[in-house]
Length: 204
Image (cartoon, rainbow, N blue to C red; front, side, top):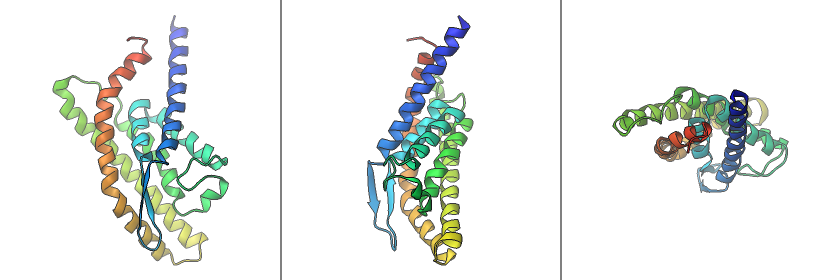
C-alpha cells in the first residue's frame, strides 16, 4: 500500500512539474515590452508561474520545473521571450532566466507548510507567503543583474558600468509589477495549496 501511494505521489509530482514547465513557457508569450533606453525590458507572466511552482511544488520540484524550462529553451525550442537556442546564453538578460531556478528553490524552502491553514490564520499565512515571494524576487533580480554585469564586463565590448546601469534601470521598470505578481501568487497559493495537498494524498 505504501509503495502504491509513493508511486502515485511521484506520478502526480512529475505531472505537476511538467505542467508548470509548460505554464512558464506560456507566460513568456504574455508580455509587455517596456521601452527603456538603450535596450527595452520585458515584463511577462513567467514570474507568476515561477512563484506558483515554488509555492505549490516545493523547493526541489519547483526548481526542477524551472530548470526543465530553461533546458528546453536552450535546446532550441522557442519558449523564451526572444526565441531559444544555446546562443541565448550570450544575451545579457539570460541571467534573469537563470535566476528563476534558485528563486523557485528559495520560495519553496521558505513557504514550506504554509498556505493550508484555517481562514483565521489566512492573514498571517499570507504575510509569510509574501516574505517567501519577496525573498525569491531578490534572488531572481540579484542573479539577473550579476549576469548582466558579467556579460558587459567580460564578454561584450561595452563598459561594465554602463551595462550595470542598464540592468538597474530595466529592473526599476519591472520591479513593482513583479511585486504585484507576488501578491497574486500568494493569494492563489492560499486557495490552491490545500486542494493540491488533498490530491496528493488521494483525498477529494
